[in-house]
Amino acid sequence: MRALIQRVEYAKVTVEDEIIGSIGPGLCVLVGVTHTDGAEESRKIAKKITKLRIFDDSEGVMNLSPLDTSSEILVISQFTLYGDTSRGNRPSWINAAKPEHAEPLIEEIVKTLREEGLNVATGRFRAYMKVELVNDGPSTVMIEI
Image (cartoon, rainbow, N blue to C red; front, side):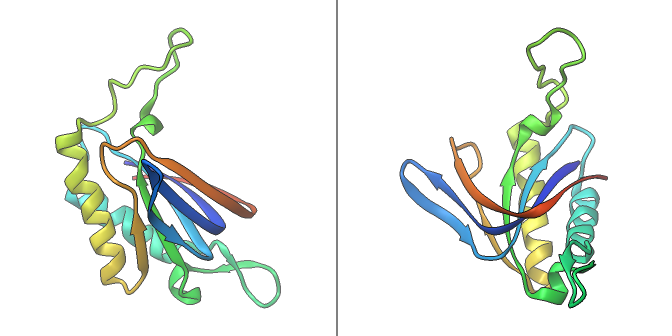
């Protein structure tokens, strides 16, 4: 399982001109699932996100987590994180999990984040989504479990 995490001033996701999820200051989290991932990986990555020290403390040092700052989180399923370009120029998606496998694992991440007390918005699985965000500094992190 992979997650690309971006600290944002705000983020929103739109499907067919309807905003289906939006957050204020927090994290936009793109999650990719592979065939061997299960509920345990979902819970691990969610716990890692909750404790990720990516927000500035009073001295400007990235020392605070989403839990410390009551940050909001936008979770978007992103199978393209498993795009393989090692052969040729067109990505192969063979390492990305099928939707039937990935969707419940994304839901488990969202459930775990909410159980930790975080406000979580989501995209819509299997939909063509437009994600808009404003970065909050140079803070993009990749996590792989």
